[in-house]
Image (cartoon, rainbow, N blue to C red; front, side, top):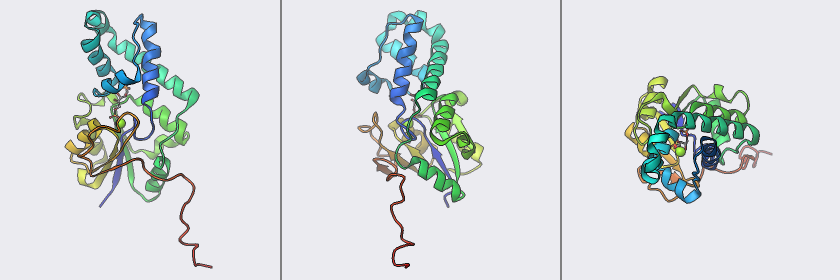
Length: 233
Ligand code: XBP
Ligand code: MG
């Protein structure tokens, strides 16, 4: 039987990638880098998960002459990007995708255990959950497997295997919710039944290894059915 839901973050809980892109672009200038990642380029760069990995991939393919200067400061650039992303979200917030808040609350009320498996950095997860669900939001999630807690990022299964390990559950007792090819592959390689919701940057990706693909997780938050009330009077 189903015992836990494991959520991806970026693209699944919220459409965060434009905030990531903005934070990357706002950061490059302060390191004297005249880079700008537009939407088209970013869609291509998203094939590599993880911010540091993405910067290295970009330099390798688009700015090879700058590799020597950038490589020693990738960690520094990425830390500045994370700080900026957190500051931007603290200021502006970001909405959860349809149905996400409701699923989290109803699953928790029903006694299901909740976990997160993401390649994004831990501070990014924390600010998103606090902003969107309130100060107690982190307490809803028993396990948060994030960022550099594993060596190999999605599509490797490592972050999902870590979440399963921390939950102490077999893969079959869980369902993963993902939005991307890399995410679906990571969860499936860990053996977890996976549901995909398409997101802004992933709607044309190959999600066929998910057990189902939906546009999103549901209807607006207002109660839509009152079966108990119909005919009860
Ligand atoms: C999300 C990502 C992340 C973010 C940036 O992938 O690829 O890298 O874009 O996060 P997924 P960091 O939703 O499949 O987990 O910059 O903190 O690495
Ligand atoms: Mg995602």
